[in-house]
Image (cartoon, rainbow over all chains, first blue to last red; front, side):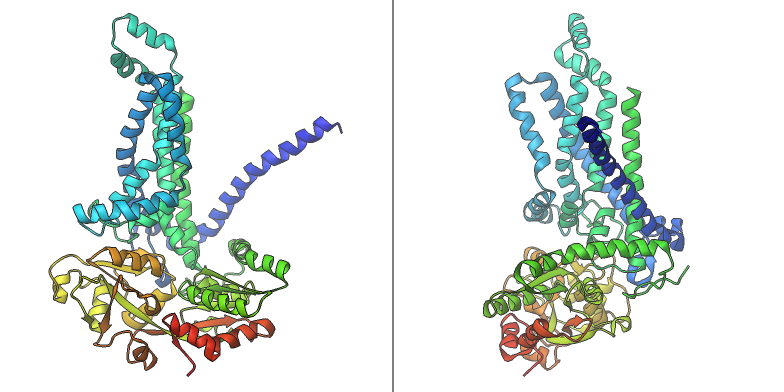
Length: 279
Length: 285
């Protein structure tokens, strides 16, 4: 076998290993979690909010709702910020500004989530407790932290979408007498819409999957939240909090929680792929 | 399908392929956990691995530190992971000694257990909180979610920020066993995953109430008396204070060699004094 052929084979095997690890993880999660879902019944598992795993109650309803609520509020905070940032960087910014700002924003993605969580605990949580009430550890605290954490994802994908719009569109619009803002709002944004929606969906996936920062600031109470200042437990926090100790059915229930999370994230990623492809 | 496994007992479902895969995965995890120990065994020659309860961990680390000073060339690795993980690691032989802050359940009774210290569970509030005593009944009702406002405890009205530990924690299990009388914790309680995290929140939030190992109470939080008894050393030793549990070391076989020497050190007057200095109550006179 020639040297080139050999290297090619090795690289192919290495590439395959990354795909197979995905397959193995999927198979593991389902093998571990499905027995519990069959045992409890899918309906009781997903709709009940009674979670007392050592007493035989496995209902993650409140956590599914909490996860979705935290993500929703995080999107409300993060998407306008991120989109505004992307528009400025892609359309209005001078080249030097962009060269300065873009790497700074990408640095935001490199900050470990535990640092975000720590900042949340020592700064954001007391702020919420003292000025808005409640224990401070809350849905709001988690959503604000996540809103900031998804910025790099939302911004960088949005910028790609905006810069992918051909310059002819802009030139045509300006030639017709539109201002630069009118051009962005009426021409560039609609043309880039599928890319921006993808950015939002991937940001959502990031928010729903984040664990460490959320455990630190969300309070982790099992109850369904009645207000934005109530503590919540998300699907990811539930797994991370209890996996260290869990055995038997309890452990299966945590893997089953993982299945639900897996399905949610798969749906998000698939829809992102579909929307991108439509373009 | 087999009946649901209750408590910490392992499922009898060894026939399920999923379970076999599961044990494989768990074994892998434990291998990683024990990785530090094994590595030590190679590089130093002698190493003892202690894994388990996060409540015992700081005390075990202290003991290990002193013991290693006295025995250069020997390494004692101390790891967290939780009581159940520690017991499991001891059963599998992944750790020489498992540390537990809860009593063994019948299925685990074939392990060799060594009590090393008594520990009180202190109920803590913010130092500015006027509360200084709770009855056992009030404590139970607090964690059952029947008392939710400080008004009901004679303090100025404000919602109580109740903090508990995560399912499976040794401290939570001991608290549940001693206080809750088979009832469930209220789902409204905040859940934190370590003694330190609970203490941190109580130190910052004037309206919170939580429980931690009595050895870890410091001046940033205030321990309240239970039925008029404060979690002081003498009260814990005499069991006058009601919320008391044992710290255990467990092993698959009675410890031998280096391991036994370490256990003997912990139970020696010097080791027990060290534990007392750290806020625990020794089992030996």
